[in-house]
Image 1 (cartoon, rainbow, N blue to C red):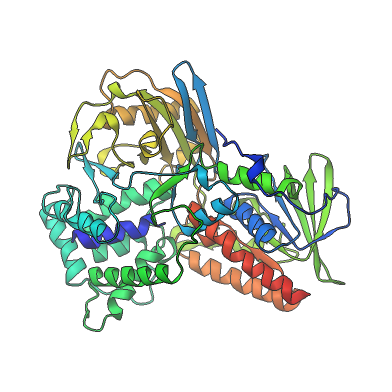
Image 2: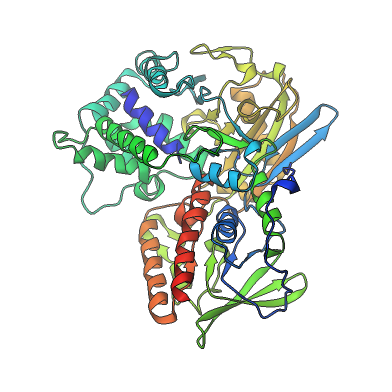
Length: 568
């Protein structure tokens, strides 16, 4: 049971002060500076400077020698990625307003190398586990000790926090819960319903049982995606996990789809894929999926891209209109800017604007898009793609104010916060979705006698957060921390920062894949009738995680370049 559950968790995870940039190490644009009123025709106009848009702009500019322009309505690049620095008499504190870290993938290491910021990369201790708060106790989820190759696999199974100990001695799951999960893992489970889309709750309860869902997966989905697993589509939100079931049934003798064997088959396949496409020798060493960041925070990446692109980045430019020029099949986009209205002409456009901000701007060049992104899905009583409000609250407390208790599996004292963070099942009466132990993950985030916690609160099941006063949100988080981590006489928190995102993370809910299929059809019609060169993209389409956005930037640049080459 535990091995199958671990494969599940590992597959999900391979799903957080602005950094100084060394000018001598950044390649700057070689294109001549163009005024905002010129008649230059760009190869590609990228609208939206989040991680998806900014990494796409970098790849087109630096790897494909395209003449691009990147526009962003806000006054900075990075979207929800914002790193901050707080300094007071106690010292320096580095924290994040948005995501706290990334699950390391080649796309991130590649672009860090290309931007010459790979010496700024930092990786967490691989043995640090995520914890679950259940029944007034913290429970570690299985993790290895950081060993490589066969040693790492042995640690993962037989180590002090390995899967065997989790399955046999751990008490996060009851014995009936372990047996039910074991049956789904090693024997089989009920078949998926025919012609019916499943939610995450449906899928997990069908395959591994109620306890795995309510005590592990439900808090994980809430903490990581700020989502509601009763409305999120399994195949849309967690496609890598959903595919494990198909891998299981593809094994001839595995008639009842036991997940353990499908998980092993996928791991073998993944190992072969990575050997066939190994990291470049000049890249820094990394482990797939290990939590990572940059020394001065995640904003190091978009800051470096802005430095590289120079005048090819236009901030505080809000798109107001797009039209197709029938004479030469180019596009003209009009913006409201700090200097008035500006129009630009381009051979192609990639929009990474969130759907909630799109309105009817693209309707003239993508007929039907307005209706698509406001379409009602009766099954979940939702119009369009939902972006729930989430508050990111970063607080610090002296280490001595945390509970003085020894944790399971030789992880030491809670005051040192030895882990990735803490998830809260809804059964525990804690409103905060999850607490990330930022200062435990990466060195130098705060003075040695402090701990920093990045707390996420709100999401699909708690939208009231979006209308609460910031002081009340901070109080709610502090109240929760006193329930699970702090001593009763702990002082008031040192509040480093709070950021309420009214529209945070796009939810891949039931019917999402159908919406994306309709969008593909619209784009293909544009190719046929208007000459192509328009793509509507973003993290609602290619994945919400930081590495998903970086991978999109790398892969979609090839698509745009191929279109431009054919257009010549």
